[in-house]
Length: 242
Image (cartoon, rainbow, N blue to C red; front, side, top):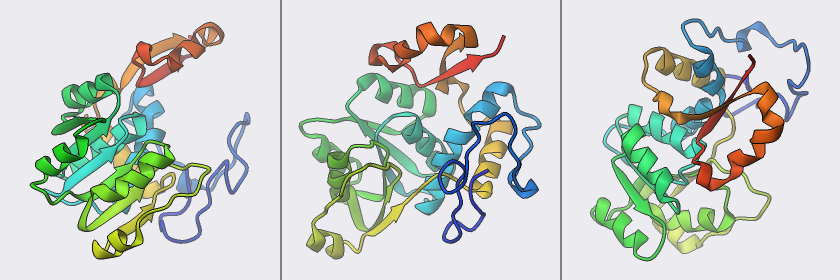
């Protein structure tokens, strides 16, 4: 439901460039309406955020056996990890939360997890035998983290900014040119990305463990705020209409 299949031109996003969907009825061109046949309601509800990850992986042109680093183990970073792994990449994730990293290892099959902090860059270098990463994705929404991510890109590699922040981002130009870094922005998703997500969901290739919490619509006023507490361990919460 977002944009056209060509990701380089004529971007038109519902709710951004065009009026959004917070209405009772919405009319869109037929080619942008995808059938959710063969999916459970839970799977259908996950499609949108997964498509953001699938689009980022396509933007980064991730290939088999490449070393891929995802900075930020939130839901979007996890979606990137799922589809990078489907492309055959060796996935590493770095984050400040041990619980999120453990989840990525145990439920998403992420090959390497690195806790943010002292010695983390040395560990990233060790994983890649000093070469650093073919593709780095930032999914933190943190300007400082986004700036630091440039130093994790290997020579000839790509840096994909999935995060969007209301801030200026700077980097060291000699290092950027020395490595011939490709810098890419990734925003939302296209019908092609949604189709890939639907195919993966139907094939059972997306772990349902991503859904960690549930509540009914009537419970939302009392319980929704609690989902933002890191101690709750929320990845994705589902609101069910009983």
